[in-house]
Length: 234
Image 1: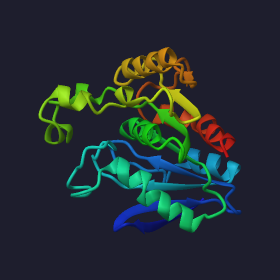
Image 2: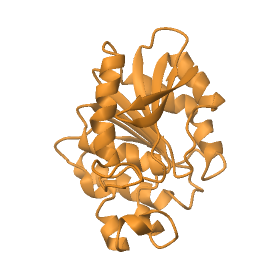
Image 3: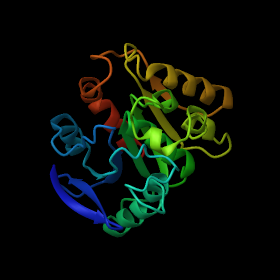
């Protein structure tokens, strides 16, 4: 994969391109650690095999929600940015490959991918959430940027993806992934899965495969499955 720096509405992003003509495009949202796929051999190999281009917007500590975070942008929320400016960039750059986009992410970015897909399901028809911190309100008060974004834990809870599922308008393909030994993320993923099931929203899940718990060891272990799922939605 070839990686280059691009700019979208004045914001930096990384663009990964396969060796051949891309047969599809996906968006990756990074976690709180800010680590993208730039140097990730597992995802490079999987994206190359599927001939997918991948755009990685950079949003340090923004949590990828509808909450405006001034360090990201003083006026537009991260969700709105990914649902509008990112889409415009991709449609201009890949006019033949963006009829239905895919989005995925890890941890903070995993729940962010769900936030975006639930609000723009006709654009982002396929979503994969890897170890998503769905119930991020539990991190309020622990020194993250959530403390500045929200006055209290309840205000943060009102923004979680689980509360924004539309049973009449949802992404057609969803995959939830979480290591069963991941005590940071598992509870929230299970709650989301239960809500999707009770709402009659179709989705797939794997909460049984284990590969080190929370972190990149697990995310990399799931790379082939993740990218295969993204590619199948093209």
